Image 1 (tube, rainbow, N blue to C red):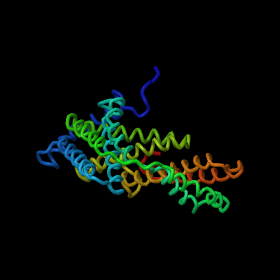
Image 2 (image 1 turned 90 degrees about the vertical axis):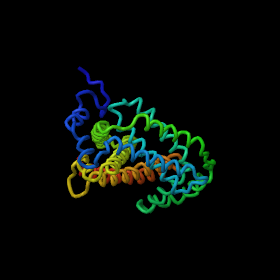
Image 3 (image 1 turned 180 degrees about the vertical axis):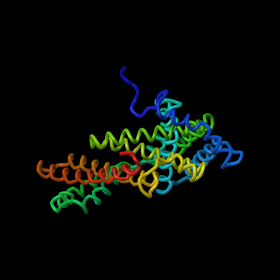
Image 4 (image 1 turned 30 degrees about the vertical axis):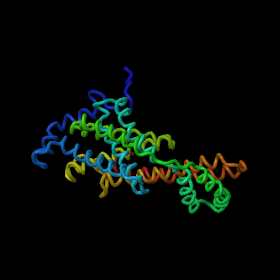
Length: 310
């Protein structure tokens, strides 16, 4: 019989369901032994509600600073990671629809980031490539400046974002996250990262690395939710055992940062390929920048290996 399930997607009888069932009394343990009369669901809801309120307070300000925008975009990723905990209970389609709200808020806050990121990556690459590549990057520098100046600056409208946030608050209020969903979701994200890491090791594709980084970030925010709701002892129980002194969330943070660098170098290489250069110069520079991307990938896989993912 052909298995038609999506790789990493929990199905009845899968390890995600079995692991949660094996810990059937864990919700009672978390609630009764460590937090008095508060239920695990109340503790989870309290953390998520507090974050939503902070987001609302920021969005209600007439002017948002760069720090505000960064914090709000992080909050949106956190909420998306929260919805991904419910893949086993709600299904992929429903979760995808629910997380569109924080995704749309984050996109509205993005602003003219592409050219800024290219310029930052250009500067980073300059310090690592050979002299000939440095000269080629020097020649392309005015094009980056022009790209930054050419990106339109749009005025941020707060009202639509506040409406989206209001709908997000209502969704979490009407359908609070359960401890069983948390456990199943953590098993799912662990399996998903392991599947994607294996794919990245085999293919070395930048797009696969990008998906891996996205799921690493989801899991980082999921573990942050566990820590905030139940404390470090419960976090230690639910984290993946690692090889060495660093804990899972520390290793994931390193991997995510390095995968982000890999993606940025790949974007720079693509931008270089679209410039007016001789064929020989283009090949040389793209090869040099993609070598940096490959180096970052190799470095990213090391902490994942220590966490048992690769």
